[in-house]
Length: 538
Ligand SMILES: NC(=O)c1ccc[n+]([C@@H]2O[C@H](COP(=O)([O-])OP(=O)(O)OC[C@H]3O[C@@H](n4cnc5c(N)ncnc54)[C@H](O)[C@@H]3O)[C@@H](O)[C@H]2O)c1
Ligand SMILES: O=P(O)(O)OC[C@@H](O)[C@@H](O)[C@H](O)[C@H](O)CO
Image 1 (spheres, rainbow, N blue to C red):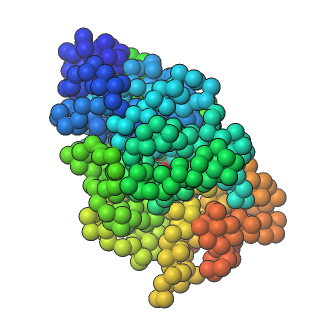
Image 2 (tube, rainbow, N blue to C red):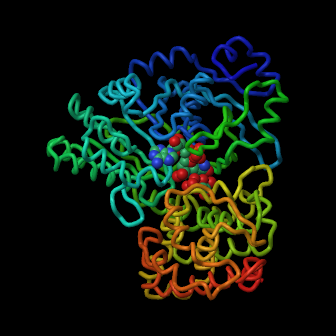
Image 3 (cartoon, rainbow, N blue to C red):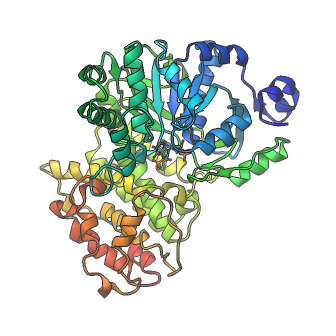
């Protein structure tokens, strides 16, 4: 059987035999409700959206607590829409991987339409404009990766595409932020109805990041006379346009071959993953862990779906901030990035296997328990110690979650300021703490610099995961020779002093020299990465 609306309608018994739970709502009614009155649009139609966010609305639909679905949009990777959404009637086969190795399979059917945010695709863009002009639209959510919000490059100058969008005005916008700003301009011109824009990416203060990028573009358009001051006032009035903060957590790895095989053995056809031209690893199915947390600031000026009934926490901004800092800057994501860079250097392809490596396990324990926890604020709704214990003892070592350091190493330049810089800044702000006393966070940062040399610990060439800043970063390190520390003549200084990368100039807080010295140890020859880890962690 195939993943299609036709099949889930007509081959119910076969799906049951394959142990796949089917939607219990009337799909055609929900599709037509959403066509007429769309309430929720999501930008960034990738794995976490399909495996977590879409499932929440699906659950509300199944329990009769909602009657519209989600419109999924991609402004960046159109292959996802063509090959994964359109070809499978917007359905997702979700496979949750339990700690005992069993797989829980279901079909998520809450996505009723999938569109390309592509100025060359007039029909998609017209439909998007129509949706944004509909006063029923309540929320627009985002999982477009950290780099999706960035308007500037490593030097703080606008990216070429942003320059173009500013010059061209709201028509023909290309960057995700300009596309959204142009759609908001349509809404402003037509109904001025309120709306919430909810970033669900792993960025600190993600709502502010989204707001700042949208307002920056809009103000540039105002300077050029494309939009009026009242549009800016509309965006800045949070009773009209709100940008709630959020914290999202569910380890959602790239599609695994093991899961693909299992599904094919169950008789489900065409399950092969796709690596798109934009480097997205995606499949008709999504494999993810069971654990999940979503905490959202409750600021929805046009109402929202009752997602609390699907397990989402709605709370105030401070609580979201504290949960987000706990997860993204201390208890999960910094540990992930440390495992990512050292895992790649040491030839690992599995996070769970890395957790069996005594030095790597110790590294994440020291970063989390010893260094990060010192500045964590208890968010009250989730206990930080319980959370980190679950991450270190259950989630990361779970052998059934097929996560790889190579996935997590993607776009590290966009994440390092959030994952480590925030803790360093907190140390700098505290009277009783000194960033220069940190050891394991600098070891992770030096590991990333060593990773950028694209040579593994055996001295073999190593493929780097994609990252928009790789060209500049690898060029800066080009003259550093593996096995020859004397070739190091301060090539890291421009990197380590760049607040765009670390959120702070590392030399100003006494960490620049420390990272340089650790880097020298890590480049000293074959096996130097392992030797350095043993020196600091055994
Ligand atoms: N996968 C997880 O475990 C997980 C968990 C929590 C949060 N997140 C957040 O979600 C984000 C996406 O994760 P995913 O697993 O869906 O990744 P993915 O690779 O499956 O999908 C990435 C999505 O982002 C879009 N995108 C990428 N670069 C963009 C750009 N420059 N402009 C606009 N859109 C862009 C892609 O088109 C795609 O839709 C992460 O970066 C993270 O912030 C992921
Ligand atoms: O998704 P990214 O690229 O921000 O980061 C990679 C992982 O650290 C991340 O996806 C985690 O799996 C996730 O944050 C867990 O909730």
